[in-house]
Amino acid sequence: MTRQPDFTGVWIKVKRAKHHFCDLEALHQRFREANPYEAIRYDEPDTGDLVYKASIPSQPPPWWSAIAGDCVHNLRSSLDLLICEIVRTRGKRVTTDTGFPIFKSADVFESDHARMVQGVPKVAVDLIKRLV
Image 1 (cartoon, rainbow, N blue to C red):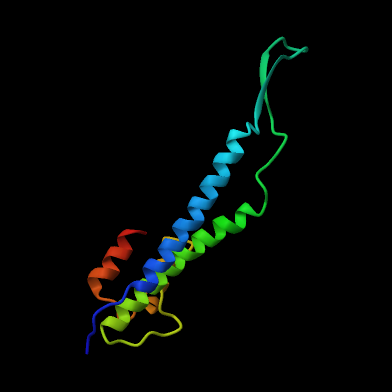
Image 2 (spheres, one colour; image 1 turned 60 degrees about the vertical axis):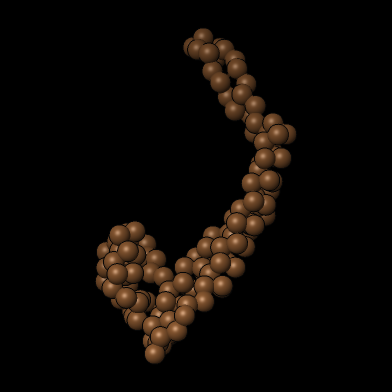
């Protein structure tokens, strides 16, 4: 038996990822407005060459990486939720392996993706394969 899909969870994750991205973008804009980098021009005494050296007195704070990680995690989670909802909609069972297949290489993808997309229609699996 099939049912109407409910992609609410998918869109919540995407919306949250956008929120994180906008936060990071605003932080980056303020950081850039403070002119954190400077090009220093000088003549190299040994060669007489004109040299440009970058002065970087401040770096973005390390905690920005947590915001970027949250953004990526929410996008990744939205893909898993999408696959799970497709499987449920088709009346199939979602397992602990069900999810969007992302692997480190195309070879690993080819050998291992099938367990993650059991219950997903072939047309959708073919679309995913085109992303590899």
